[in-house]
Length: 92
Image (tube, rainbow, N blue to C red; front, side):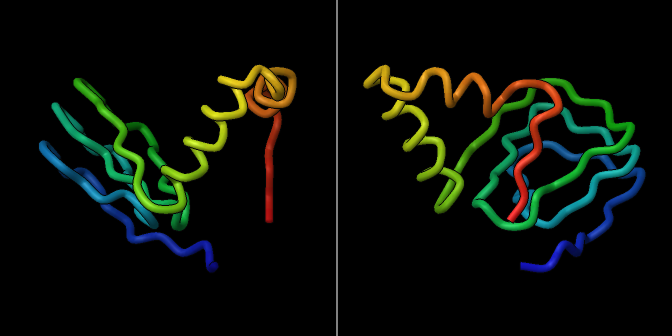
């Protein structure tokens, strides 16, 4: 997977937005549902955000479901805590 982005600058958004592979720069996002399917990570630089909901689909949803299942079982709480510790970065 390449790390290329579609740049969106100084725009306003509402409603449903697919964010895979997009770079939002100085954008305004109000009452948005950001849809992420597990593609190239979106980036947000100097954006104003109000009323945000994340919607995960496809590979992204399956990853969330895996983490939820592990957490539900209690078998991986340490792993999940370590995974989201500030400064932790995972790469392919």
